[in-house]
Image (tube, rainbow, N blue to C red; front, side, top):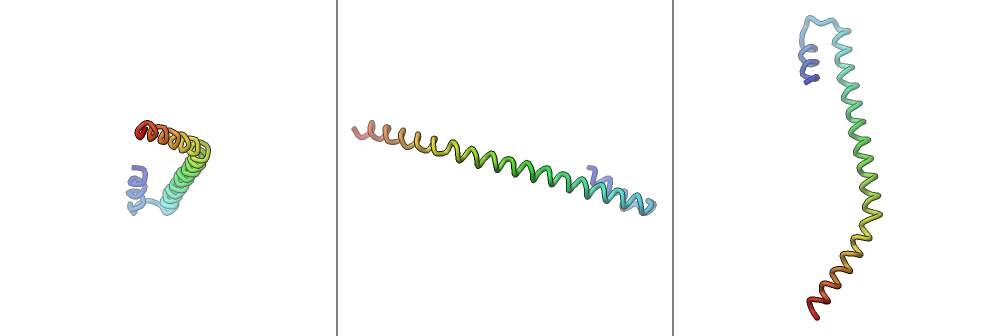
Length: 77
């Protein structure tokens, strides 16, 4: 919504060039800030996900294998 208002203002020919420049700069800074925020969240999520996988996956995998062996023993015996 903000970008639509900025675009409408920029396309208005009655605005002074300094105001147009200020609006465009505001939009670019806002987009850059949002991209950095999303990028940092993605990095944090990736770091947490990789730590979780490294810590818990071996335990889950060994528990699953042990449970599978016990289930198969009960099935075949």
